[in-house]
Image 1 (cartoon, protein in one colour):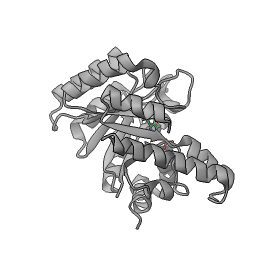
Image 2: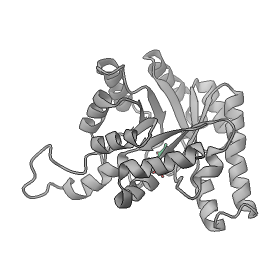
Image 3: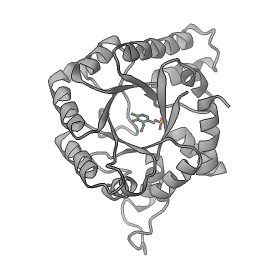
Image 4: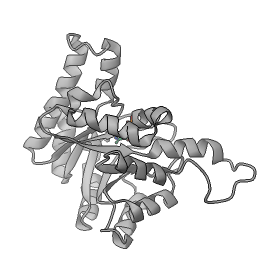
Length: 264
Ligand code: PXP
């Protein structure tokens, strides 16, 4: 049965929409909504993992959010980040100084484009094998579980295994857009094919001794077929949950997604 990782970045995106340029009369520390409060609600709703993406330009989540989350989280923290020296140093600093069991326990390496609204494609592990190997080794030496966010391609899965990654998170964006185009009808070849690509990649990942995670653009309509894949261990979901939370609250939005993920 898959676990649910809830990505709280999008709560920070709402906060920054208001405060990015400084709002009149704001007292520092009172900016809302607070992603840390969202994290608390997410755990009460059944989140098994909390994911936070600290971007180079701090456009949504900031250093304070990461620091606080590492201190207060009672479930696994998954830090998404670019494979830069700055980010590796931050991950190791939090790993070393956390009072709460040494979080983040997991780092997911992602590509980062300045202009993108959200992560757009998988990391090119095969194209930067030496650099990846070095970054993975540094993080693993500190006891961090290291995951690569990659497209469902054999070359990337094999390169991730060679670089020493513990897990691969398969980019489910292409599956999600095929699902939307086909209206969820798996008789449509493009949709069946995209699910098969994710599934094949998952089998290869597990066959190479890594953990198979999946995420990106999963929602309440399209998540079941991915959650049902044999080897999948964790699903990482953000936007759909935060969107649903606007109407029903974070705790219930997570409960509903968790029900779908575990097949209730
Ligand atoms: N996994 C990774 C690696 C991501 O970068 C993101 C987006 O932040 C997600 C999962 C969650 O994607 P979404 O917000 O579309 O659910």
